[in-house]
Length: 255
Image (cartoon, rainbow, N blue to C red; front, top):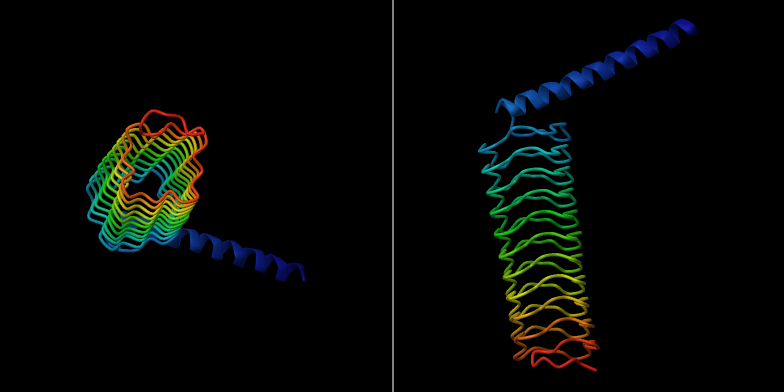
């Protein structure tokens, strides 16, 4: 009985070591360009600057602090990957899958992620200024405190997104879907929200100074104590909107 137990333990150890070796080989092959997939790999701080990784599968990979600066990441699968503190500045992420990925404090400065999927991703504190997210899906994502200064999010799906305390100064969100989004205490100075869907959105204490809300749907939105000085509300739907304490375009305070 003891002999059998010892054999089982040895077999288990050999299996573990073989698995570890296989994983290491997979990571080496990927880094050397011999493989287009590295599912669940451990590649923290990997040097991938300027690499052409078009179509690569990195589902579930640990890529914390990895450097992708100027990399070509078209249609890459980052689904469920850990990209905390990763450098994705000036990358081409068009059509990439980042659903449920962790991108806390990640850098996406001047990147193009148009048509990408960030559904359910965690992007708290991410630096995403001057980037393009046209027709990109962020539905249900946590984007608290993100920097999206001058970013283009035209026709993006931001339904139910947490954008509290986000900086969206001069961002463009034409026809974006922000239904039920949390924009509490966010900065939207001079932002363009023409024809955006903001039904039921929380814009309480948001700074919308000079924002263009022409034709926007703000039905049942919460604009309590929001700053709307010089905002353009031509054709906007404010049915059921909460405006108590809001600073209106003409400088008056809504009762």
